[in-house]
Amino acid sequence: MNQNRWLGDLFTKTKSENRAALIGYLPAGFPNKSDSIDYIKAMIAGGVDAIEVGFPYSDPVMDGPVIQQASEISLQNKVKADDVLRLQSEVAKVNVPAIVMSYWNPIERYGVAEFLELMQKNHGAAVITPDLTIDESSEWISQCRKFDINSIFVVAPNTSDARLEQVTKLCTGFIYAASIMGVTGTRTVVSNQAQQLVNRIRKFSELPVAVGLGVSNRDQAREVAKYADGVIVGSAFVKLILENSNKEQAIAKVEQLAKELSEGVRNAR
Image (cartoon, rainbow, N blue to C red; front, side):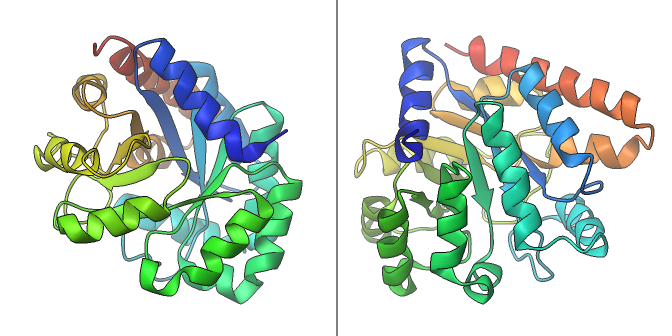
């Protein structure tokens, strides 16, 4: 399996179907280590195309209150890098691209080469590093290429054109476009800055662009999927799990939300 091509193949497939990819997010070890994969499988059963496995961190600058709460639960469950990579491996086993979303400190602490080597063994597709700047990423990019793992950076509406050109040249797999300046979370509307940002990115790169931050329902997913190559949803799934202590009910609601979001991205164009 060439995991470096896994995301490329996914976006080729979704493009041939004239739709965006739906990407779901869940922190590893949430709501506990054993159940994370069950919720992820419910997302996939509902139509999610790829999974972001979150590496819980104590200082999550990009995460809103819902994901912060989930990450705190994961940290209380003593989730470590090996747990993140184990979950990523379980996702890959069900033949869905498995992406790790991690702040830089936990990766650096674990060891860059060691982390990526394990990801490669576990058929990981990519790593998103929201707080790693390209100015400090030369070793990271070199190691990602060595281990055949896509490296994805995050850009935001306030990123200048000059900076966009630099960052997008260093992304592989896809480009993560944050729809707003702010933190993750469900919102009543998705910022109109998102489409403007996607249009600006496309001046500099032919890579797929996936939009995250704020998408929580079918209508929002449909709206974003009209112009983006991927729609990323995290807080909406996490919120359902937090609100439903009964696992069976929570899984059913997660799958239902995934179905509705999938309908949104499939009916956008």
